[in-house]
Image (cartoon, rainbow, N blue to C red; front, side):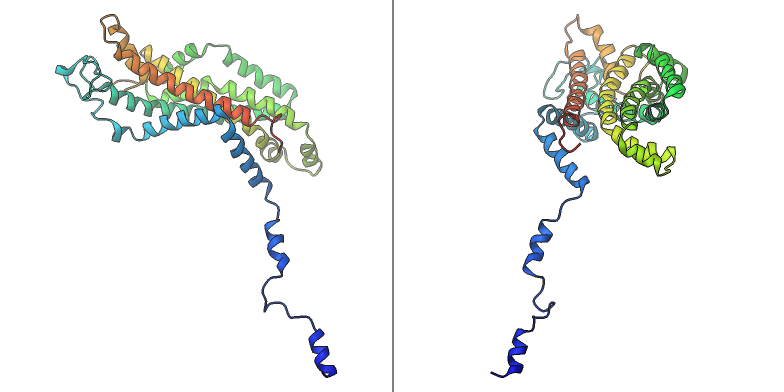
Length: 318
């Protein structure tokens, strides 16, 4: 063997012909996940292990699905009057019986879920859109600004929810949109208080002080460095408010100032059905009452489960 051959054998093999080195795959697999992805996986795992959260999600998801598919699931038109079939008990033709006009109660309860869902979704959005900025500003600014805003919220909170709702509906008028606006105003103080409580604790943390020292504006600090740490409490409050909004809307409809007829609200069905309980038509009020109980129970369980899942004392990633 010549000297040239030995020198050629000792040269390193060029990269690119044999692909990646053996250690490249292991390094790619061991690359750390992003913090957001890791927190999302941890949240999903904790949520699946929480019985209350899963039960609430199942019930709430069922209510949402029923509301969305009400036109498909309803065997009859909820507004069709059939006088010969009035006040019939539950049967194959009418699973939940009929009302005093012969309308199918099962179809009306299904379509009532659509109104309940609209109220449950829109009310927290309206209340949060006003209450969250107020609470965020109060918690961040402190001092006189905090005192003035919180006293304003206390003045609204001092009124009973049903009384304030009645007053606002009387002022705005009787429609679904006005009822949502009225309920949103009623629950503004709750969102303001929850957001303010979270913001007060976040403002004193180190990352906020660093942002201030770097010259970040107050608006940027509130939106980027404070608000994200308040979202968990706001989310829990939204689920609780959804349940309360269903109850309050049903109460207003029961009193005759809710969603106007012929829209089938659960509360308005109960209002008419209570007059037929003594005569034996129990289904007229039992089934819409059960619908309210199930929907409210689902949102409450979901809220309690989220509170446990998002509790910073039990979250190792916080």
